[in-house]
Structures are given as C-alpha cells and as structure tokens.
Image (cartoon, rainbow, N blue to C red):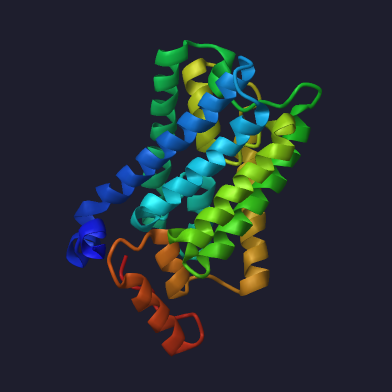
Length: 270
C-alpha cells in the first residue's frame, strides 16, 4: 500500500523527478491561500465569522500535511523552507525552487478568488488591523512566526510532520494564533500567503511587515531549536524537512539515528 501511495525509492531518489516535490508545494500552497484569503474575503463581507476565517487555514494545513507531507515536507511557506535549510534539514539547492512555487501557488489561488469574487476586500490580504500600526503588526508577526516555526521544527525532530502529531500541532497552532492575533496583524506568518493577495489585488500596504516579520521570527525559532535540541542535520529531522517519499525511508532514518546515537550521521540521500 505504501508503494502504491508514494512510488518506488528509485523514482523519488531520482533528481530529475524534483518536480514531484515542487508540484506538492505548489498545490499545497494554492489550497492554503485559497482558504486563508478566501476566508478573509467572506469575513470582510460579513458572511462568515472571524473564528471560522482563521480556523479554516489551520484545518487546511492539517489536511495538507496528512495527505502529502511525505512528498515535500509540506513547507507551504518560504520562512519554513529557509528555517529547515538553516537547521541543516533541507538542501539549500532546493530552497529557490520551493519559494518560487510557493509564491506561484499563492498567486494562482488569488487569481481564482479574483475570478469568483472580483477585486474586493483586498482579496483577503493580511493588513494591520484597525487601530494598529504597521510596527505593532510587525512585532506580532515576529512572535507568531517564531511560535509556528518552533512547533514545526519541534515536531520535525521526530519526523512527525509527515504524520498525525505534526499535522495536529501545526494546524492547531495556526488556528490558535489566528483566533487571538488576527485582529492585530491578520496572523499571516507566511510571506507567500501575503504575497498572493498583494500581487493580484495591487494593494502592497505594509507588505514589508509580512516578509520581515516571518523571516525574523524564523531566525528566532531556529535559535530556540538549537538551544533546546542542539544543531540539526540528524537523519530523522532531515527526512521530515525534505519529505520521505519512499516507503521505509523514515524507518531507515530512525535506525541510522539510533545506531549512531549522536544524531550527526549523514542523512539518507535526498
């Protein structure tokens, strides 16, 4: 069954099939931004509650991690890809491709929303809330993203972001962050999620907040991960950050880590 779902090891170890990972990121980011920005539009129109608008992206991320986290690691966020790379759990050579397709997926989602709703309500763009200044939203995005990346890196340390624990942890955190912080900054935590609506609607108001805030938050999260768990690069975290793709590869990574005992063994070939 695993072979039917994920394909053969030879197929997914073949670098010429990198498109599978990239398509996974494109598709996943499309669905995430579709729900996040679409929920923002419908909330602004008064058709759904704020709670529904911010919980929906968390549930979508949960579903995405479960159904294709094993393919690409389900980053869906440039800040996540950069954090995994800095930790040594994701190849730097894959970072540009991941970021490009994440931005493309976000843009395609907003083009779809434009076709459905027209250019209204900033197409669900993340903006500082009424009564809050850009610097306040910036500080909020730093803290929220640091928390999100801490959850992701923490669950990835057991390769759980390709399973139920990571899906529940990450999805739950996104929903929780949105429930209390969306009125301040929109709780983006994701430059790609903010990029799509800004590009398609043409509204770049305070967009710097949603690039600088998440990136700085990611740096803080990586620092916290080093303090809590030491340096990255162990086989299990590498499998989680890069995607498993092959049946038995996660078990292979766990065996290598157990056999070495120091967490510094070379990861399975990506």
